[in-house]
Image 1: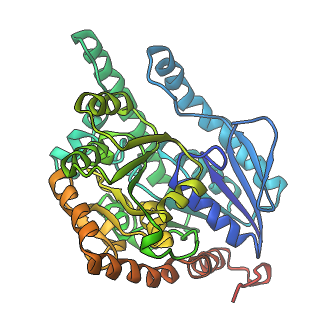
Image 2: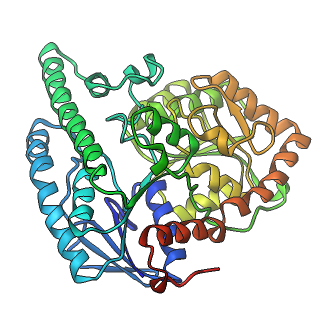
Length: 428
């Protein structure tokens, strides 16, 4: 069977968990079928990934930085680029005799990808690893939070802009309104397009995302939850071999709870404990200034690191923290902590409780609670019995998300959509 994967980002041009999850699916599926990967034009020539070819042929739609010049180009591009991408995808599908399409899209990619699939009459799978089909900023704005994540309109975008004067505030409001109109139109067209075919499945990576999709008008009978694949490593080392440190790996953004990490570490005032921060983002300057002002020691910023290095840091540390203030779909940090055998402290939001059972496979705290985070860290460091209980339980979690377990679910899904058993080599 010829399977086409389409992802806005792909290794080595990745942003984080979504691309890693896609790569792990391809690694498994490629054992049994021919896989092709389309991504944005990060370089001119195709490259190889685990025996499959990555074709960088899609026109880029998003903007890297928000400036008036970039916003103007972006406004034009989100209208023209989808048409170009549709033509390129349709042509690729025909030339490579594709049997099924697997999309990993972001908000402005949904519609043109679906149209390409409908035009070629191919079945398709849509992976949803976030909330971009519901909210234009994926529940990360203050407006979403103030409305208990139930209202989503241009205010989601407006409150995500920062402006220092009245003119810029007016301009940012206009831009936010324009972006929302485009987003709303894309979602509307997407829902209409789905009604034109029956050969598809929407695959959220958690029950939380599934429930949010159903509440927002997506057909429940077309939704199937499949969790992400774990990237298996040795389940862990003995506690004495771990360094006395905490690791945070993620975006340096307020909604990720990075300030709570810094505040909690300062409250602990433990000179024998260190904190490693992996990632980058808009809060970097503010964080470094605060740390310098408060004279907080033993904090090291490592910037962005390859996933393999992050996984090793997890394995060699005592605790992983990820106290997001906004709902997570089902963060990869959960699976990475399982694989490393390292207890995780995260927030009781979104899909996190599906993976983390409080005081059994990790510690759950409430969002925006740096005092609670500090207390949870201290308890794990001081309570050997609890630490060992959680670490031992993590070994049993690995099989639930193994490549074999999740990979078979994927293959059965493809089989059910293609319907031609003669083209399918089963892994069973």
